[in-house]
Amino acid sequence: MVIMNLFTLVLLLLTLSRCSSEVVNSSTQTCPQFFADPGGALSPPTVFPGNNYKEICQILGNTYEYATLYDTANRIPVYSAYRFNGYTQCTRQSNWYIEPQLENINYSKKMATESSVTNIQNQAVNDDYANSGYDRGHLAPVLHATSQSCSDATFTLTNAAPQDKSFNRGQWRITEKAVADTLVQNCKGNSAYIVTGVVPGTGKLKNRVRIPSYFWTAYCCLDNNQQVKAASGFLGQNKNVPVQEMSIKNLDTMLSGLYGPVFNVFGGKCN
Ligand SMILES: *[C@@H]1O[C@H](CO)[C@@H](O)[C@H](O)[C@H]1NC(C)=O
Ligand SMILES: *[C@@H]1O[C@H](CO)[C@@H](O)[C@H](O)[C@H]1NC(C)=O
Image (cartoon, rainbow, N blue to C red; front, top):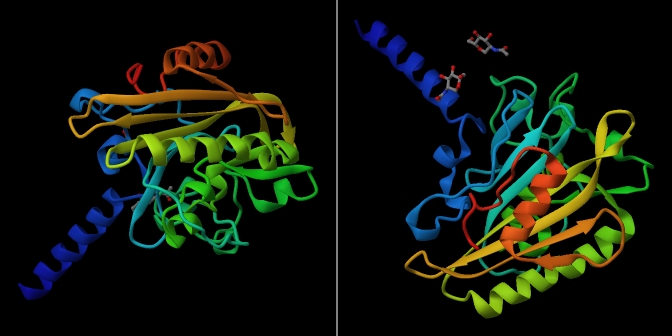
């Protein structure tokens, strides 16, 4: 009897642990804290249909740090979504992680080093970027991290896409800094939500990893009654030219044109 109960318990625990997978059916269910809720209604970015799009609640230690929609066909993310709570100086990691569950849903839900998984097919690996002339460009960036563990968790290739080196270190960095400074000034004591994404271009690294044609980012600042206090969008080509600032509505229109299917950064809200 006791043995039977123990067996049942083990089965139950196995089932539970599988349910809390990092690659999730719905990140708005598993990690809703990273998505804006203007007017009290959760308003996530569009999730494209298709088996190649995987929702990830990014976890390194025991804390969810941000959410990503990953495209296993192009081996780059579509976007990462996170809260901005101010920023601090963090030490940049030299290791980049991968997401074991993109290879097999039964693997660990925590991001891991490449060497811990054999035959990686469904995502980029470090070698894809080696000597390519492209940076592993962060979507959720180190610059917006409030803690070292949060910074560390951005170093997963599921949060990165090939980014022109001079753009990453030039105009895009200026944009990340400007967004951070704006939110520190204008969204203090309120809730700031950011989504940063890429548009797939025509070229590939190592015939595996799609090079984005554009990088984009957007913020939505909500007051304590979930009313929109400030919001703005930014779109830049993947080369070191100035990034254009625009309304969320215009960014939605631009991205819908670039992606093909209709795309909304904040569920059509935060205008
Ligand atoms: C996730 O989706 C799969 C496929 O539709 C389904 O079999 C599974 O039960 C779902 N898991 C949860 C936790 O909802
Ligand atoms: C994951 O584990 C379950 C239960 O052991 C098994 O049925 C399933 O085939 C496994 N999935 C993969 C992709 O290996």
